[in-house]
Length: 420
Image (cartoon, rainbow, N blue to C red; front, side, top):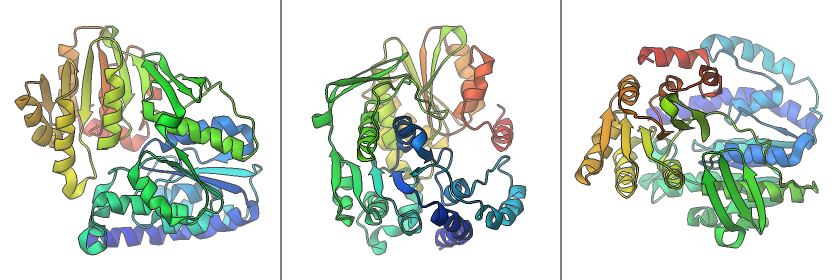
């Protein structure tokens, strides 16, 4: 009941900003590309931006029911404080009258992490093209009421159906990951043409090292300046298809790709270590692909994992599944951060004979790393519990702190409370 009330209030307030954003969107009237899914959509957005260039406005740093209306209106949050909201409410009607943006295309990333997001955004954005490349348990707790009496056999079905609603409002083309059975099933909510991306049909080879990643797709090689998992090839293919759809010459040079912090960034760390920062978020699927990628890197590897949050009653199941995945990995050492990791993952690893260290708070994990690291290791970070705060204290060049995620004052204050 409480969760339903929170959702209702969330969309009620968001509709206020959507109302005024619709006014400006109507006068602008761009051709809309909507990118959604559980994981990888931000990278897909930036790859698409690289292909489309100045022809498109992209919703960088905006993907929610508030962020997207703000992006259309031109409103910006700065402090992420509650004191910003009166100004935002007052400015929305004025910004609605600012007129059209100059670009003819609008590429917008949409979270889709709440039930009802598809029906909230679909009639509003009216996408011409929709890209859906992943479906996983990123925010399972928000979909719990949809299972059983809610009409779905599993939370996975409920989440996939929610993403499928975006396709139901798409007018011309849907680009999907056709290796995911749930996506294929729920893509049936539309009758428009489907562009199906399958690994065996597109991906010829994939290699990765601490300098970047390389994908050979349809016999053309693409080199990216980030240490990215194999699954990013779906985003590369989708960006190429979007360029083709709009009659824009695509490029094979992806060296100019810039993606936000906390998504497979690499830094030099103390004692000659290499820090692989994928700390922005984590669900089981995204952790698993990072694990598989990290295992391909040469050298001694340690993995530092934070809790999988927002899993609700699936919390124990997801962490235990992660524990069993880790028993099959060859990391020299596994460092767990958070009460969920300690309760559900640690016992599985200990029973398998793996070397594991577990800490409730990030400060304790930081102290352990500072004392235990010998030098030259690759430290891989993924998950919640303020891992970016741990990384901050391990950097060789402190100027790199600005390249980490969650630099806003509100996050600095939270990390300080945890002793970071």
